[in-house]
Image (tube, rainbow, N blue to C red; front, side, top):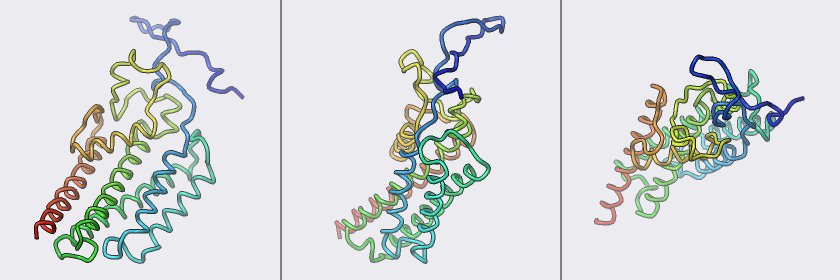
Length: 244
C-alpha cells in the first residue's frame, strides 16, 4: 500500500489551466500525513475532569451522568482509532461531533449556573479565591470546547484536511496568506485551533486568523459572547467581594 511519502508532488497549474511540473503546493492544499489524536484526546480529558470536580451548584445533576457519557464516548473513539485520524467511518465522525456537542452542553449549562450563583451569592462563589478558581475553570472549558469545534469542522475535519481535497478554508491562518514564511509541509493542527480559541476568548475578536465562512464567524461570535459574560461577571463579583 502506498504511503503519503510515496505520492508524487502535486503539479502547479499554468495560466492557461494546464498542469506543469513546478513548486509543490503548500501542505494544507495537498494530501499529507494524518494528524495525531492525542492532543485533542488530552484536552477532552481535561474538560471532563473539570466537569467532574465543579462544585454541586455549578454542575448539572446527576453529577456523574454527563461526564460519564463524555468519558464513554471518548474511550470509544480512542479504541476505534487510537493513533492517527486517517479515516472517517460512518460511526466515528458523528460520534466525535456528538462528544463535542455534549461537552458544549455541559459547559453552557455550567456558565448558566455560574451566572445564577453570582446573582444569588451561591456557596461556590462566596470567597474570592473560589470565585476566581471556578470562573477560570469554566472559562477554560469554553476555550477547549470551541477549539474542538474549530478543529472538527474546518474544511470537513482533520481526516478531510489530511486528504487535501477542499481548497477553501473556513479559517484563514497566517501561514496560508504568506506560505513562503512557513514550512512547505505546514498545515493547521489541533494546537493551532486551540490557540485560535484562546485568543478569541481573551481578545473577544479574531487576532491573526480570520473566519471565512458564515458558520466559522458564528462559532467565534458565540465563544466570544460566552467568554465576555463569564469574565465580566466573575471580575465584577470578585471586585465586589474583595471591596465588601
